Image 1: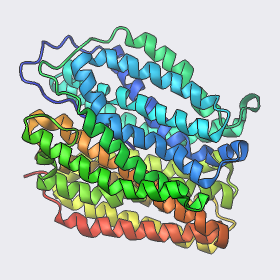
Image 2: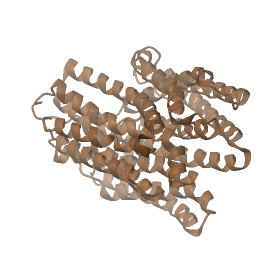
Image 3: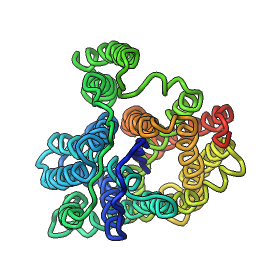
Length: 474
């Protein structure tokens, strides 16, 4: 359930050539592919483990490597599109996404797959920002509102498709290929979209923002030096290099903050501008977003693993079990704007509370019925979790962007999405590692119970801290 960067509104933009219905379908297909790929991998993790003999820590990297690369390069991708042409970067990102999907599908080892997933995340960071940029640059009025609504629906629908398609492809075991079709299916679809995209109109910003190379490098060092040891350290017995990376991490973070402040003071446009970060709506929204997205990322990882390894649902059963959550999210996200118009920032704590109730219900269901839990047993709690996440997530994005200046809308959205992807990866790294450690000693049932208990507490943190968020209607 990812969101991408909004194109900045540029005064004096060129006349819009217009986005045809076929062009809109093309960019929405381009948006759907990376979103589907983000979720499709969850239900395939146990099968990947069995085939490539990957550790749980390596499986965490299969998920997190995509998110880290996407988080680091997202803003860069949007700015490159503004500078060199959004259609050009859409095509470049789609080419790279198709090629990296092929690399994932034929990866001979777990390490190769992790590297290919990181490259796939980087390709997504070039591709996804162009979708909203193209819509922003080539539509206006009612046509733009309709296109943006369809983009939101595409995100929700892609989560449903990702769960079901992933489970179906793995279960089908086409030609004995196991998990590989979940990546290889992107290749023919990507080639078709590439042909369709040749007719998209080109657009650029008149005054594009530069790329913060040093800031991007320092952010990458900060994230990798912190997250990789968290994921790999326990499994490897905490060798010296993991400790060294953890020591490097706070220094890299301090250097990143210093560089960003200095660049803004000198009149540049840093990757994550401190002036934007200081806005109360942005600062408070990001603080609430860390536990929210961290909890969601860890839940999706641990839940998919438990369904297959603990409850033996199989990949298709796991996809079906996750579908009520995705359908509920899709449905409620379409109604969230009306709820925000009526209730303002209160939608976030309500969403956090509903998510917490859903997690407690899931915990009670699994503990009482284990190991004979069915999809129908899980459905009520899944619906509650989907509703809660839809209320909180969509409203958080609206709050963060509510007081960002119009000419920095793309930067503000990039800040929020970077926070989202980083927190998702952090959740997988920390609570995924906790699950791996506990499942080895306590078994899947108790390990799952402990992690879901922590996720429920994080949801309550969102419910409590969300009450202090500013009202986006003001």
